[in-house]
Length: 254
Image 1 (cartoon, rainbow, N blue to C red):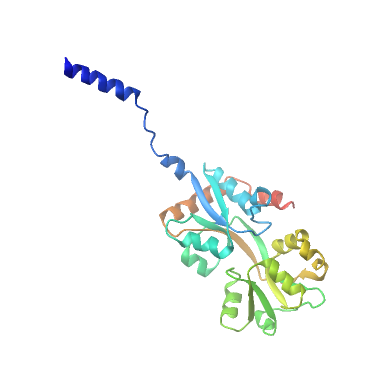
Image 2: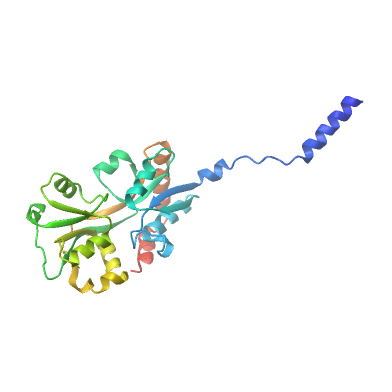
């Protein structure tokens, strides 16, 4: 009888005990975590939809049932966090390039935008090849990928490169005559000249050089591991289900 009572008591306790909920591994797998930077109009915590590129990436992952979490850092830190063990799944927006492909799984393009030079309207620079720019002081942003040829020429000293921490500072240096050209994305330049009070006075004196370096594709750089490869494939699947061009246009207001 006693053993029967113990058995009944055990059943009652088991029934009364809260059911342990398993760790929501499935839910965790449905979240993709990326880093980005303040790079209007493509990305930025204060931007509408956190920027045009973020809007596209969020919609693409939502199309395959994933929720996007983006945290914003200075560029070099955004990249370094992804390289660190246990870091986020990837970072974006990134240009295609040999060095990037060596360290990351590069996604299919989420859009394109022209990369070229900002210059002073009163001192336009005519050039056909990079050799024509040997005497020019060229501003670049520290840590940014530009084009393989331009970056290689600056790295080995064939071109005079001057680094700055941001596109904004490069445009200020250009307006002040401290550099002759600034490598910049055209949409980024237009947005900065339109929205930054410190540049409004200089805006009429600056322009985008008509000779474009390259129409650059924008990507997510995922971690070079099995999960990163899987996320890149999922992003491609989701991107195929949405109208990325329309989302970009709406986010950019064009």
